[in-house]
Image (cartoon, rainbow, N blue to C red):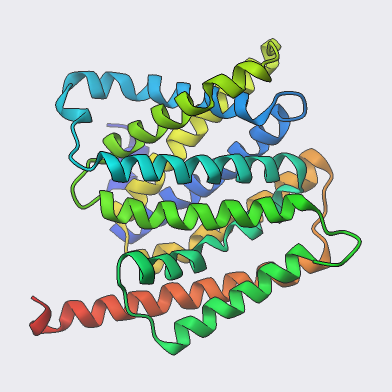
Length: 303
């Protein structure tokens, strides 16, 4: 074992989780940059299909060792629902990233936290208090400020980013349901294969033979997506969600830096104001959810 690995193992679990989550946030931001670069010439369906294919290839060795049990599920209907919603999230979210400044698309994407609250009430029958509702409404105000409706700088791609956030919120709630009985690799495989198959035909219609550089970008999109998702899983395996969740917002910092250096995009004042409101409202929502879970966990009647 290397000195670095030994030093890492000696760290407290929350510190391990925080470090891994910071890497995951960087990975997602790099993936957004790669998508934007590849999308300058290639169609979004082509990008997604190659991404899903890459993730599937990465997962194959693990799945093969336990096949067919690794793909067995008695919740196929829920998997199909997740695939459909994930398709919307990727199509809308990737289109927004390609056509908007990365920082803007990333900031609007964080609105998924509020849609998780709404869908958790509808689907999971969770009870939400007045303060969380107020935080959710405040978050929507932040998103509207960033979308700039009625202004000269309003674009349809901001709406795509919001649609992507809505769909991503639904995906997160469905994953909560699936994770009660399914392994992470099974959930990821159904999504990777399902979305890829659905978009295969449209991707052939819009297909343009990638250059060598574009092939490298496409494969790196798949690798960065897989590694970032796995890092996210391991981060929350080590650390407490209440401590780690606010670190997700470092993606805004990464996205802003990448946008300035690589694409020359400086965030507009509306984006800065709206993103600040969204971050504050999201952080409060996470804080309240964690407190409620702790109270339930400490209540003997709940055991």
